[in-house]
Structures are given as C-alpha cells and as structure tokens.
Length: 194
Figure 1 (cartoon, rainbow, N blue to C red):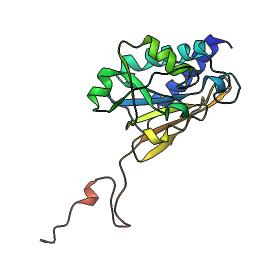
Figure 2 (figure 1 turned 30 degrees about the horizontal axis):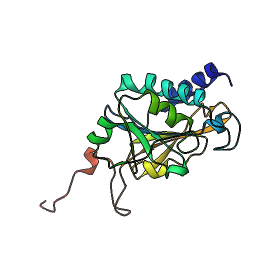
Figure 3 (figure 1 turned 30 degrees about the vertical axis):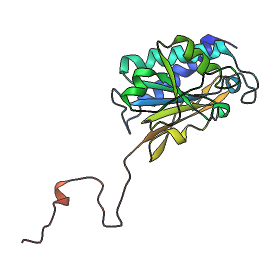
C-alpha cells in the first residue's frame, strides 16, 4: 500500500471536513477517529491490520489537529468494546473514566497501536462525548459523538480503499411549530405589555 497516497487521501478528507462552513470545531474540542487499516487495504475489517498504515494515519491526524489545538481520540475495535485511546491530560481535562486495557493489532487495531506507541502518556477510556470526527472504513463512531449528530458532506471520501464519513454535532432543536431557532428583529419577544 502506498503510504504517501494514504497521507494525501487523509489530508484531503480533513481539509474538506475543516473547511465546511456549516460548523466549526473550536480549540479544545474533541475529535474522534475510527479507522480500519484493513479496510484501507481493501480487505474486510479486522482481517489485515497494518501498523505502517496506522502510523501514517495517526501522524497525519496529529499534523492536522495539533495546530488547531483540537484533542484527538482514537477508537478501538469491537474486541475492546470500542474503547478510545487518548493522552491522559485529554482524558483528565474532559473528566473521562480511564479503563485498563492496552491496544494490540487484533484488539484495538493498527491505528490505536501506532497512537499508543507515539503518545506521551496514553490511556484508554470507555465513553466519550466528542464534538466531531471521521470514520474510516465503517467503524461506527456515532456512539462517541455528542447528540445530535449531523453527517458532513465530504468531496474526498476515500482513504485508500476505505470509505470515509464525517460527523459533527449541533444543539438539539426543541419545541414545536411555533419555536424559533434563530433570532432577528422580526422575532422580538412580545411580553403582552403593549
């Protein structure tokens, strides 16, 4: 697999995601990434994990997210209940419960193992509430993105052979047919005092 092409693909996906005008992830936001290195290689999930691809994905994510000051969580596979790897300081900042498990190639996956080796003080947590993220290869990150999740339309939606989907979150729209969701001069509140 051409690692330079994987980096190029992922950079294009991230550029699409972060240049979207419908939302903005602010510094300190949490960005979750689910990644099947097997799917990037064109194989079924969990059957052909590759550490070299995981390293390329993790390094590309760091190059893109660090300057934006966005925190990263890497989702593991089903064999560790989709636990999430992150730096300890990120887990503590967000008050996430740390769990005891170490990723391996067949229980966590290539991207988690690569991230574990590269991070300063990696920990796994069981549940998070992220403000957005991408799913490389159908790893189902939705459970980790704050409700309400909204799909991101990506012009570039492949990394290697894997499809990529993006999610961000928006506040819930509550109320009924009389509810307003934006404020303008036409929407001045009538307190019944006129």
